[in-house]
Length: 200
Picture 1 (cartoon, rainbow, N blue to C red):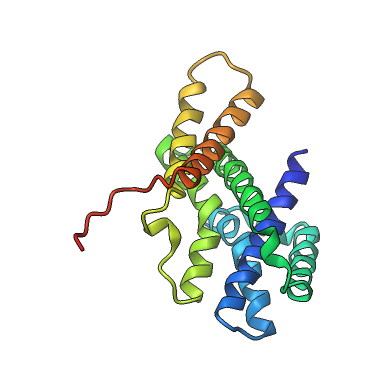
Picture 2 (tube, helix red, strand yellow):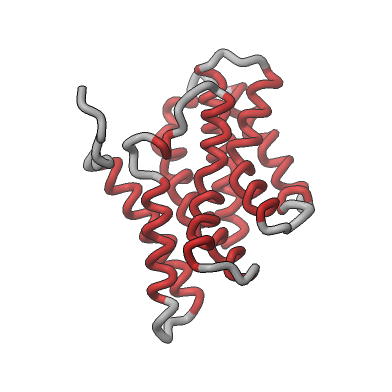
């Protein structure tokens, strides 16, 4: 199940990258690059920072095949892809919940401080989108008012709080990931945003 959700998250991130590249009217190479960095950018940066090389996707070609297939699918069905936006948002949200906890656990395995572990989790979940937006000349969404990285940080805090109690690790994993997902869904549904420090 873990591997399946990981692959579904990769698919969602890859297609979301393709959609952004379409909006920027990039050529085929540009579309593939944006799809790739969106899908694996966060995990790659995390692995490099903690010295886990070769990075994860280089050891499993499934990720490369999935990204390419997803990009081709999005290109072929680009006229109908807008109907999938809600589903893609849900997969993306599940993905950030999963990848947040994965990044935290990677940090724990590297004997890092909890704050650094939470930073790694947030990076794993969101920095693929940061790289995508920078390459597309956009201000990354996590640096704007939208609740995205904040949800990852909250899930990370819950993860370490729950670890103080005799709770099974898998349960902690699920609860922390669910917190990220719930905060993200609720923020979008009720249009909750971080305060704007700039006056109009």
